[in-house]
Length: 360
Image (tube, rainbow, N blue to C red; front, side, top):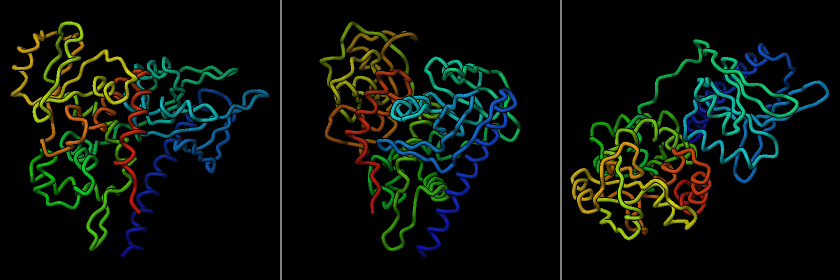
């Protein structure tokens, strides 16, 4: 049985690696069509620096100069994905080069502004490493690399369930009814999501030992990337403005409301001065909060109030009226702000590692 499981895991890994190889090769071919430079690839040169990994080493020869890049292959790029790359790129001995399916014009500008070098399968590119400077945008992706349908597990309902599993070690071995209650999703959807997580290799059948959530670091990365695109916008109850520092002496009943984002991060790390005030709350408590604290509706306000999407059973931890550190981390990464990203790294190292540590 273990041999079959290992073979299945190996097969899924090979499919993923083949897809990444395909993206890399198409991107390099497109790059060569636009820029007449010889490019050598060392696929064996995977590197790990302080738990960070890059996929391949690329050598680009420009006249008598050889430039080296560590290539990180990502099928798709989001704001949170950019934040994850920013965390990684400063830790590597060579420049980090993002290799991806497609970078649209606006995203190309954002990557350039943040100093993230990239190439894609359409021939768009940004490289700024003297003597080489290239910035190409506006090319359309080849049909083979157009956006693939998003897995249900990374749509809103699936994201709620994954969050519950990540925050509650062992939840995968509870009844479907218990899982549905913890994730605040319909009972009928749990079976579908569990099957999909198994198919993707994130949930392993251990026989008599039950199920085990696996590849948790990868699963967390995918959750953090999908959350601000798929689930978070649906949770927004409104943006508001209040008097200066109104929130500093405010305490919540965690059953009804909790601090998220920069406020929670500041409380956890003492490193950040919040600019945006994030609150997760039950819809029933929204009006009492607004009245009690004299908060005024303002689309440009610095107070964002979101619906609390989990049940009181989920993620009750020792920090009282703050959301779980995984959600704090996701909120920070979604901003793309450099200081928030630095704070997110601190929270990851201090509070989150214990939730994604793989069991023997």
